[in-house]
Image (cartoon, rainbow, N blue to C red; front, side, top):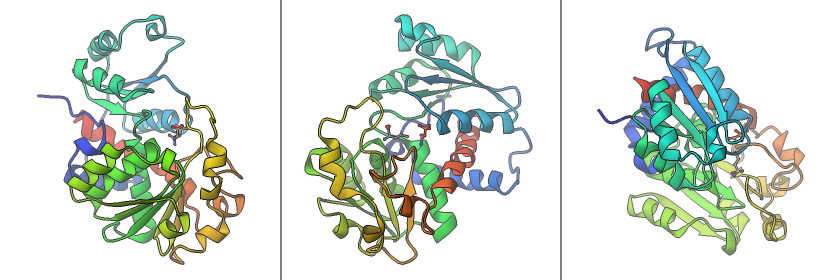
Length: 300
Ligand code: CP
Ligand code: NVA
């Protein structure tokens, strides 16, 4: 049987994603529909080619709570850093571990790993997407505001990897997404086209007020992602900051979301980050619960 990879939201169906989130929510409530320790004796190998706090800790703690174990490899302390190929690494890790998570730059590396692994591969972020993050974000929205279906989600700032996974999610969860981005930093046309071709409702504007007006969630992310240099980004993105004035344009019960780490005073002000509409700490916590759902789905 082919491994159950968790690569990107455009490669999975909505029913599977809902099932994974429901399982994660069961775990969060302390329920074990799969029996306690469903991953007893199983090992997750995690490759980090970029830094991480939340992804690393939530996957490691998640594996422990599911009865399994996690091993961390970085470029500098594994043979990947000395030129062993992704394909050979995939073949070898598949002989030891029951699943592999990778955080890397190029999405092609994730796909190559999946092509050569005989165990499930999980995308822990690439330059192009961050699907585990968006699963946790959806769980968080639904806890606070109920089903996403029919709601409006606003994204303001860089049309980056996290934005792309949110755009893909429109196809599966029936919400409208309005992005406000500088033209130079708009999401890739192919991602928008895939979502629209598959029934997603996505619009892109350069006006943050237009995107945020009446929205049920307001989301942003860092102006400079890992591996990027500033190259005028701060100047381009300054008008897209989420502050009290912009938040005031959203629905009165709108939530503010950010995958973290945040750059306070840049993409978001302290007043919004620490304000009553912010759900950023729940988002961070839900990485753990949503990923426990993903890990169980992949390995069972
Ligand atoms: N949000 C997120 O993925 O955080 P880390 O980079 O700390 O893993
Ligand atoms: N867009 C950010 C997300 C970090 C979790 C980055 O890629 O650095």
